[in-house]
Length: 316
Length: 316
Image (cartoon, rainbow over all chains, first blue to last red; front, side, top):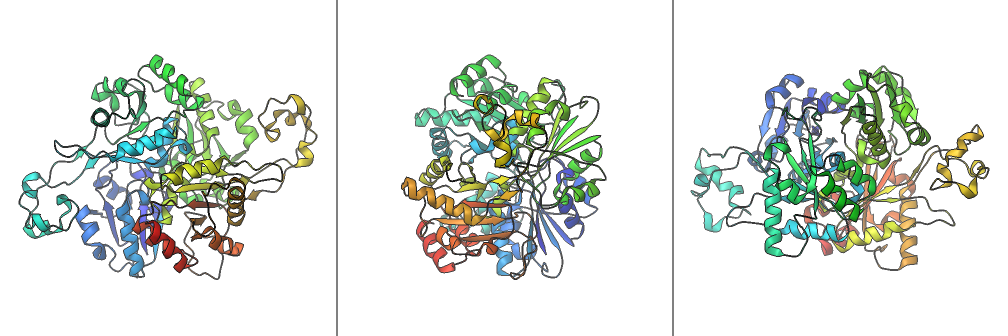
């Protein structure tokens, strides 16, 4: 059996009882470690499972799927995914490959940010399509998220904005030495398989987009596109950090717990980075169909209560 | 501590390890049993937890929240919810009440149908707003879902349609004897609190909307509204049953396992009820922005492969 098991959002104890039993039955266990991360490291998971884990980076999942699936017809093999197994497209690929090889599969679901975002107080059925926001560079500022937020906003719906993470990204120096740059078949240089031929790769340290970077990037695109989809003073947003971990009681410490911070985009922009807690972060852009109960629930997280109430009352 | 704990979708083993530890620490444990159901009964949960459960019906949650929250400042009390805690509005109410009473709360997330629906092969970020479809009566056919599906369809997005369940609904006979029908403050007669004053209530047996009822209701509204949002022959849909339970291997038996059935609305309408498996059911209306990989993955569940490919190829 090939198991694809969701680990939930926070630590080793967010796996389900069914998932834990499956893990313990497996002869090989892969931990997917590039679309999201847990808040604990591999050692802690291994100690909890009593099993060794194999880290599966993007290269391995995309290029060595047959090795991951090896012998899964006769043994149990697990592929562990932070959140729910269907959060990232790449896992669907792996399941399609298993189907081709006639390997039996079983999915063990778990919480993902797409439903846990309900902790903000905004109702899940009032969310439109989810968007991703990637790190801008000087020359690359993909802005299709802006159209998606606009579509949602037009319907009064909230948008969950997933913030970029860069794990095991190859360094510029490394990329610059690509063998076949002009004829590369891969959609982006960083995914180019021929890099494999050039021996040892050089990786950047991991990066997780902060709330302030996200808000700045959103407003930067608004300032270019000027369609009035986002406005510093009147767009309400909710910043989420480490959803699913124990809520922070004492405001003066930072123990890595969940934080929810609400306000206008300008309110959020005016906060010091530390207010938003530790990564991973997500951001909600609230739609105008804000119900009274949503406004009240989320309002408790507002950095400027007066601002929040004034704008929320206009919309709800 | 007042814990609100998601149980996931299937049976007693879908609780997380963190959730199970919390349950075991509680002096009172409520099981919410009216917005959704697990596929196992209360006895099985009690045996697994080694604890007694108190069934919380709609009346109790809406009228006796202070009893549910009693002593939660000094003891641990759990409120168990099928799926994720934020699936239903009513639980937000309970958390707001706890906040008013300054009772510390902790949410333990889990899978819900809103993310587990990814098992269909359709990508979660291509879903628009979620809608609910209630049982029609001869005189009551609420159709606001139609506008929401239309909004999603216009953007090419998929729609998750949650199908009605009726658990512990009062019988018509019972409702007919309401004390103050003309001055009732409750939004619907079935929620009327003054019913409580009249002694023993009479309840209908539970009902769960089937896929065929859902498809018929959808097409009935299309035939009234005639806006071309849904079409028997060209709208692709995916019927889901018991998401999260072990996938059915042997097509000739019905062991209550997950089933996924894809086709046009007419394809689905032509199937016998048994094809769709046991409740709970959900239905996805596929949007026109169907990616090739989504079409391939979901196509394996099609009742009429040729039909599916022909239409999916036009859209993807």
